[in-house]
Structure formats: C-alpha cells, structure tokens
Image (cartoon, rainbow, N blue to C red; front, side):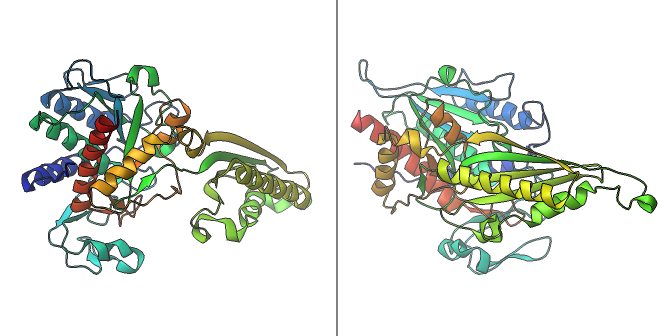
Length: 419
C-alpha cells in the first residue's frame, strides 16, 4: 500500500505555481449579469490552458463561458475499467475584498505566534489557532492590503501539481482523470454553464476545503432573498404626514433580524440570516440577504421568520410597499452523496492511508460540488489548506497544500484498487 510524499523540488514547484496564480487578479462581481462576471478571470484561464498543454493535456481548452477543462488519459492495461474521476477548483476570488496587486509574503520555517504583515499589523494567533499547528511550516500570506487568493488558487496549484506528478511518474496506474477549473464560484454561479455530460466524469472532488484532513460532504442549504421597499419621497420641509422613508423601513427590517441567528453569532450547524447589501434612497431601497441552514426544513423556518419581519414592518410603516423575493441557490450535497457514499468513503480512506486523521465536517458555506452533486456528478470537497479566506488575513501552509496533493493521489490509487 503506497504512501505518497512530494519531494522538496515538487513542493517548490507547487509553491511557484501558487504564487504565479495568486498574482493574477480574478475577483468576481456579484452585481454583474454577464458570465463570467469579470473578463479578468479568463487571464488565469488562458494561462492554465497553456500550462496544461505543456504538461501533456493536449485537449486542454477554455470554452466561451470561461471554463477550463482537460484530460489526463488512463494508463491502465486494456480492459481494466475504473470510473473517470474529476478534479475541480475555482479561479475567481471573493468580490468583497480586493484581489488586485496581490503581493504574496513567503515565510519559511514559521516560528509560530502572530504573523507580521508587510503593510503593518499582524494575522493574530488568537483568531487563527491553526497557526499553532503550522510551526515549522512554510506559510504564505498577502501583504495585508488584499486577500491572498488561496481560496481557491491553492486548489488550482494542487491540481496542476498532480497533473505534473502523473506525467513524471508514468508507472503509477490510474484511470481517466478530468480536470475542471470554474469561474464565478464565489458569487454562487460556478456551475451555471458547467456541462456535466461534456465533462464525462463519473465522480469528482473539489479541492476547496480548509484544514488538514478535512473531507466534506455537507454544505448549507442556501437561498438568497431580496427585500424591496418602496416609500414616498417629498420635500423634507413639507413631509409631515406625507413622507414614507424607505431607508428607515429597510433599516428597521435589518435591525429586526434575530440577533442569535446572524453569521457573527452562529457556528457549527446553526442556521442564519445575513444582510449583505443595502442600497437605495428615500423613495426606494433594496436589501439583499443570504438564508442558510443545513436542512430544508430549517431553511423554510428562516424564510418564514424573514416573512414575518417584513409583515411587521408593513404594520409599523403604513403606506410602505414591501416585497420579499426568495431565490434558490443550492442545497446540502449530503442528500445525493448519501445515496452513493463510496465517493466519500474512498476519500476518507485515502486520508487515513496518508497517516492523517480524517475530519468530516459540514461546510458553513457552499462549493461548486453542492450543485454538481445535484446535477448528477457527486462531488465531495477535499481540504486545500486556505485559512481566514475572504479577508486580508488570509494565509495558507505550503505543507498542508503538499498533503492535499498527496491525499488526492491516494484517492486516485484507492479508486483503482477498489474498482
């Protein structure tokens, strides 16, 4: 039973890839209607196509939607059948924090404690307890003025390193492997134009997780909500008994959200309502919210509570027109994966074979794998190492990234053995 270990040179190549990708601005835009939501995501896509071809994936291509897909052909003896496995990561970075001009900081043999940032300030150990697990590691941060982009360029660099490793180790037997890099995951649209049939994978894994050893088969059930408040604007000097201030009504609604069910007051399996945007004026104001829960029943409960808040606001502000619209985003991928759990079980076994204690945790968020699983491509999530994602305090351990590569190679090995 082999155990996979990247050499120092292979770890160095992994780091070089990550730094190269992190410097490319691929921030998505949750207000854009086009797809991908930003053309600059294609800058990374084009580079990845070139690199995949250089690694031997001659069919590597970017389609009109900005997806990059490629194939590592099976090298199994003729007649030996193994399911085709997809490896997927997303190219875009979080729209709420700048990804322009990322200046990665590489700290070798990290001593532990707070991490000083070139721009001033620190990544505090108190808010990043995993730093204590990474003493002696090489860690990478931004300079503190932007995010780093390890979510999910760590996953991309890991997959590219896997492709390079397979090229350099032709005696390692594996089935057909499909590579997929997606745009717009951070704005919940990563699979909007993903052609599962054309991808031709039987099972897949996203490399988009966090802590060492985590394998995730659960996400939130997620909906988005938009509340539109239409008031009545008149000259403020003559407004008594006439004006209905939509800003005040909308503020009242946000303030009425349950204080014990907000992102900043919940953890684990607790659901939440989250106001993410507030735009408008006296005459008309719009609130955008996220609705999150691990079961559909809890999701409905959150939406019923939101509906009750809207109704009470209507009573408190007579004459205001308040409209609530709910749109489905994704559902907990546990539902389809639980019907064919070997895709999860093989990943957990691979983690153990690599000498790591696996951790199966629900994701307080979503991945492309959630929608793909409901589209017929069961896709659990593998740790990629990113920490404090979406923030200027984002960091990643090169050691954990290397372990993600090794675990994924082991997953491919388990599929061959079990098939």
